[in-house]
Image (cartoon, rainbow, N blue to C red; front, side, top):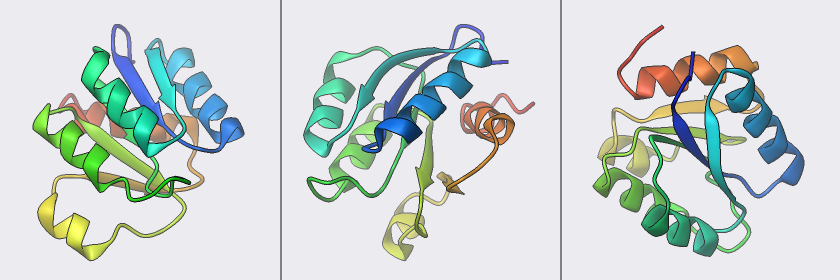
Length: 121
């Protein structure tokens, strides 16, 4: 389903990041990087080539809004995968943003990555 799709994962929990990576790879996608902090994510967004991103909203070193804005500027399809609700200010600025609340089944994650990319199922 994700054949040829390169995915950047931004997630501070190592186990969750590994689970997300497994889901992407089992669906035929390629994980090009895993960022655990806002600063790592900002650097990876600048340097890596990817087709979609999975973004946690709760990272240990601060607000992920700069990462979200950098992804938006790159027109990178993004799926938010977080334990909390999407803040209203983020929803208002990015109404197209796909937001999943942890946990979800791998198939749902894959489907939402495809939907974010405009491919559907």
